[in-house]
Image (cartoon, rainbow, N blue to C red; front, side, top):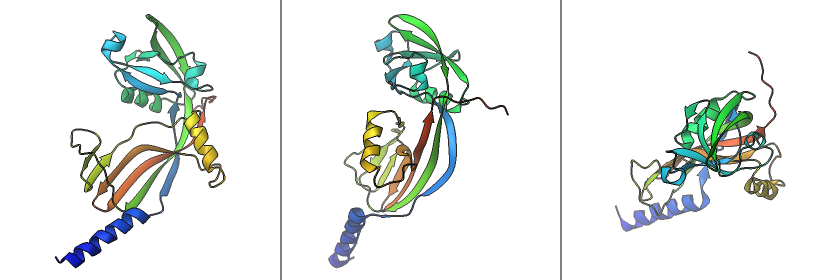
Length: 221
């Protein structure tokens, strides 16, 4: 291939990277899952002396976790008598819980174990997908078995798991910055999902958080 055609390909790729060429994302149906609020992290056994567990890193007012009496720094040992070993396990239990139901958490606080019943709230969201053309450049070089990896600018895969809390200061600032541009009911963008790039093609899956409700009535089926 001549130098001329290589230059054409390079400038074309650069234009796509700079301008971007993305399809209009298509929203899916409105979905619901359990929610208690707060941000959680894994606690190393050396930190708690009680084995692998999860601790509550940040907590916001007017959330089910706060109303149940949980505090930042609490270590979640069990939920409904099942040991909690990592954040993903805790999230799966909460997500699958029926809004309005009750979950019993065993919490380790100041060398004492507490039993706290938590009323599960409800998070309403949409799952979105989009298709993009461009270059997903990265300065990192990580390969499998890491959940996130990239191979130069040619191949990338990311699987963000960080949840969005509508009660957090970061979300409040984001809403203030875009309230004049977007609809008030458009929800808050959450990168929770995955993104993949191969050469100039990118696919994304993410969530749009619409509501997080604390007071939920249990409906009979």
